[in-house]
Length: 465
Image (cartoon, rainbow, N blue to C red):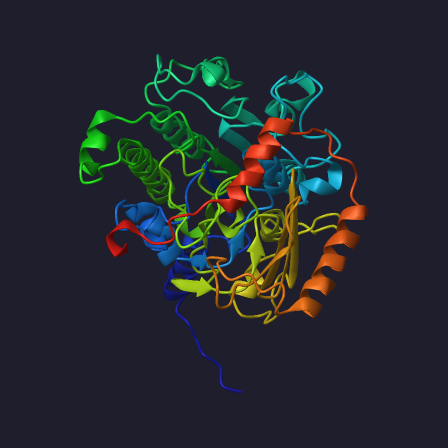
């Protein structure tokens, strides 16, 4: 046997080097930080990465370019509150009666059921500190307060908020939009510009919790009404003639700058490579705020693609591929399972979503969801593969082949009767097993929502009209 002799001082030096290399190397088993960035009422076609010819969003785009953009990314509802209920619980909210937005005459007993667990509650036993910055909209009573779900909060309870201290919204919304900001870790200062304030608080949360695993829910109000933007941002979009869309574009622009603020803070503390960042909108654009859902028809409040098919991307450096477009159907309901699994937890059967990581890495070749279902006030929908069926009252069901008709312009109900009959039956079987809704929309809103299915929608970007 050959014996290698090592001089003592050389051996000691090598030993020291060995210890240094071990101590400098980041722990392989360190849990990832998680940042969930939610835009509010953003049109699908209003980002550079989704084809906008008018609005520049380089920082949001970079998340999809340095990660995965989900070409078939859906939310579980076409309006704010139920969509957020599904997002944060990982469960289709209609399975626990959260079909609609919270009622206007909100009671302290109304909100996300207290027995339904949310992402921060799943992550807390796994060693995570959680924080919500921004819009809550899941109940404002004591038992439904975000303090019962998150470790830290800096938020407002309702469906929208003024962007300026003395900002004016419509009379109907003015009281809710002027609600006080609340926090359990600081005395909230008066707002300067709400999007900037949310971005600043997100950056501060990251800085304060840089040495521990954290879950940050960056729940921006932008570009939800009221339409209020900084003059310097509006000036950048003088090429847009419609004043509503010009202001809306300025609001999206400012949102993009604050996404950059979050990313910069992660990079400053060397956290960017071990942080999962997800960006999506809670539903499609409502059109009336100047948003554009091209190439999709429909809008917020409808189950056409423009209401539920949203910009959706995820970045996790060195863990998932970069610059890919994932073509299979995925849902906001998948994020809870994805985050729990990444944090080292086990996903229980009550969740309706799946861990997306094996799919985007190509380890699982199946589609995450062969079938998806939706229910909202007057409408129902089911997607099976590339086939999508939509039903509304006093109208025949509508059947579309999304592989050739993403804009839902060619109703194939009579050409594909067998397919339609099968999907109608599947949709009915799903719905009869659901509980009654906890909240109901007023009849006048139901009538307005039904009319939205008969409207003509802009399906192309302005420069290509």
